[in-house]
Image (cartoon, rainbow, N blue to C red):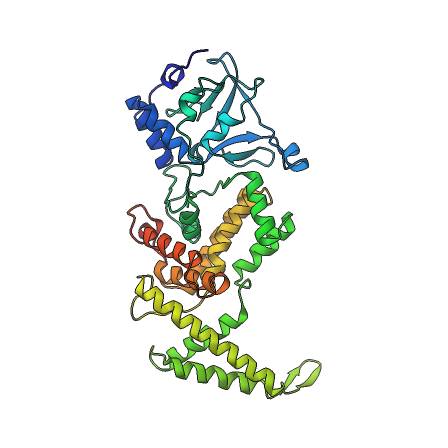
Length: 415
């Protein structure tokens, strides 16, 4: 079969009322209207592409890919439908999708496969591509071996909330969405595809079942997934700032923390319904070790804050009030990761996202404050004062969200 330009087997032009869901579909439509197929293929090569797979077989044998093919009268038989992120259907319990790059579809072709791959079937940006060599080479040559999806702000213009409590909760996860090149306001989450979403939860969180997802999500929303030592240390500074009108001398902060630790280590009498219980004093060596650890932590915090001020994340007169954002930003994403892995429902995901947004509004005054809290928590957890990718990636995502006209942080009031 000779190579057929996609326009020869494509649907009608976009109606005036049709709004492309994201910038990806917009770019495809524009390239198709110009019949600029090189540009069309380059858009596909630079973005994630999804296709349906069989869930029962994917669960029983995760190492294999069981593709689901469709039927199209125009093709006269089977087709292989692939979708860009804005054209994906809402998640269903037994309908799942895999995510791959453009060139992969040409590499895995088998003689028993359908003769046509159809991009976004039935939409104005639809295109038919021949799946078999040598004709597939006309489009496969535009593929990229390792496309970089990171540091992109993608927004659903239709199909995703842009304002209100749901959008606010989704925007709490926007730093991670920009960092990973995901759609920030996609409640109907597919992420990186069913199997990779499950792999993410298993390898990073130890989650392999619904109960584990529910527990992790509850801990994040209640802000119990980060160190209590961080809370104690930052809480001390908040108390001092309140008592002294905002300014906090670092030396005074260190000494105040040491005084509290020593006082708490001297032993006390605790009165409960069952009577009085006396706690024994802690050994002096243990107390001094705790003080030394807290004072090292204060040093790390102040150095990260100084760097964030230099990089424009924090204003000169501001400091990080808490790292609640580290949990709440991940809660916004955890809710969606669970939906992508089919551990939760769309209704559960939406409820959790709203809870995360409400908690964030109680903990912070602005998106900038929220962002600084998230970045500090992430760095205390991962970065070890290297100021490497764990820090730099978030600073770049922060700058995008604080400057792009389409950013939710510039269009959704924080409180």
